[in-house]
Amino acid sequence: MSKLKNKVAVITGGNSGIGFGIAEAFKNEGAFGAIVGRNQKTLDSSVAQLGDNFIAINADVTNVSDLERVFKETTEKFGKIDVIVANAGGAVTGAAFGSVADIGEADYDKTMDVNLKSVYFTVHKALPYMNDGGSIILIGSNAGHRAYSSFTLYGAAKAAVIHFAKGFSNDLLDRKIRANVISPGTTDTPVFDKFVPAEQLEAVKNYWAGVMPIGRIGQPSDIGKTAVFLASDDSSFMLGAELLVDGGMTYLSPAK
Image (cartoon, rainbow, N blue to C red; front, top):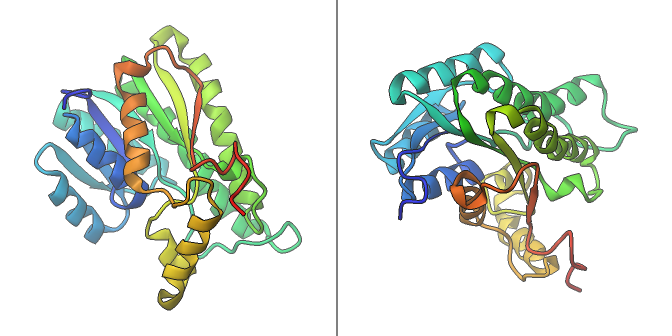
């Protein structure tokens, strides 16, 4: 398998969940690169699974100086960068979820910093190190299309990320750098552990599988395969596009 042979990728949040699923899919298609995260334990275990063609960089994507270091270190190691996956985001440790009547400025800032500001500056800081003709892959969410209870801010941030794919592609036409976005739905990742007691995990996952038209929740490998397509030359005619990988939740009526 060599759709990404010799391509160098940087995957933020690549140490677990969807990000690791993308990194693993990239490795299987011949890519090199770096995974980025804040948890040294999961960084170490994930890079060990990926093998010698990947490095792990401990960095906070909400810190612009950290982002600069990520791309500098990756370029020093591999000489170039072909693919950026701005995956880091999601549930913010310490930030509350709730309605517009409940969420104040501090939680607003935390949610937007990790889900929107970090995406913008990941791309901004990557560009001086990217090859012309490269691929930028953003991770949105079907929450950018659907009003889930208590997820107003998260959904708004992801809707903006979906727009970023269009705007970035337009901004970068002269360099032939493509930006596209994958919007997952409910996916089997460690995020469940942050919100659901261990004894309820299986029941909650079964609930979501039951309401999804396809009859199951997503796996990180589902997103990984889609990311391989967007990183490869197979998608060279796609710019600013969104691929909804959500088991039919957005386009089809939920299962009864």
